[in-house]
Image 1 (tube, helix red, strand yellow):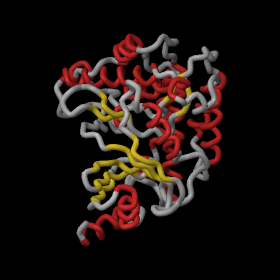
Image 2 (cartoon, one colour):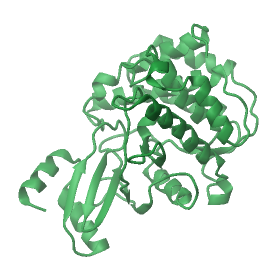
Image 3 (cartoon, one colour):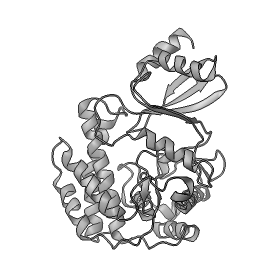
Image 4 (tube, helix red, strand yellow):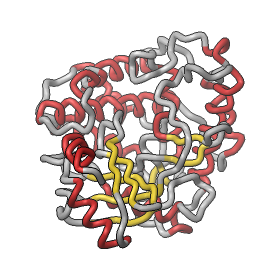
Length: 348
C-alpha cells in the first residue's frame, strides 16, 4: 500500500488503515491492502477491502455513542453464515471480529460480489423490459428468503417467534420516544394508530430482513437476478409481510423521498404496479396472508423512526453518511405518507 494511498484512506476511514492491514496480515499472511469507503450508507460504515487476491467487504459499527441494540454487526454475520448454504442469495461470510481492537469497534468481512446496485427505484438508463425484470427479480429474491425455515438453518433462536408486529411497534415506538430530537406530531399520531389497528397474529414466522428494498440488493451484472441481499443489521425472526410491506413503500413515496416512484408513469417505464409486484411475490412465496393497509403504515412508521435516528447521529457528529443531515427531514415526510394511507387517500 503506497504511502499516499495510506494517507488518503486514513482521511476517509473512521479507523487507522494500518491497523487493519496488520490484522489481515496476521490472519491471511503477506499481502498488499487497498481500502475504499463505500458511500451512500446511513448506518454501519462499509468498505471495499482488497488484500492480496482476496476481494472483500468490511462492515463495522460506527464510532461514537449509539442507541442500545443498534448496529448489530454480530447478528449480520450470523445470518449470513446461516443463509450461505441456502437458495437465499447472500455474500459468503469470511470472518467476524469482536472487541474494539484494532479498528475501534467490532467488524466483519464478507466476500465482494461483482454486480449492480440500484439506489434510484425509477432505474434510469434501463429499458422497460429490464426495469420490469429487476422488480420481478426483487420479488423472487424476497420469496426465496422467506422460504427458508429458521430452525432448519440454526436460526430458531434468532428472535422471538410470534407477535412480531406487536413487539416491533413497541420497539420502534420506544426508540422514537428515546430520541433527544424535537417531537414530530404526525409521527406520534401514526405510533398511536398502529396498535389499535394491528391484525391478529397468524403464526407465520420467517427470517425478516428488516430493510428489504432495491438499494440493498446486488443484481447480476447482466441478468435481472439478485445475487446478494445486503445490509442485515435489522434482521430477526419475523413475519414475511413486514418485508413485503417495507418493499412496497416504493409505490407510496415520491422520487425525492429516498427514490420512490409515486407520481411517475410506471407503465411507460416498464415498472410493475404494486398489485403486479405483490402477485409475483405470492406466486413464488410460501402461503401467507395478504398484505393489508396496516403493513404499509407500519413500514412507513418504522422507516420514519430510522430517519429520526439518522438525525440524532447527524447532530452528534457520528452519522455514517455525509448527507445524513439532509435526509433527516424525511422522518416527517414518511409519517405524512403513512397518514395518507390511513386516510385512504390512495388506493393500493
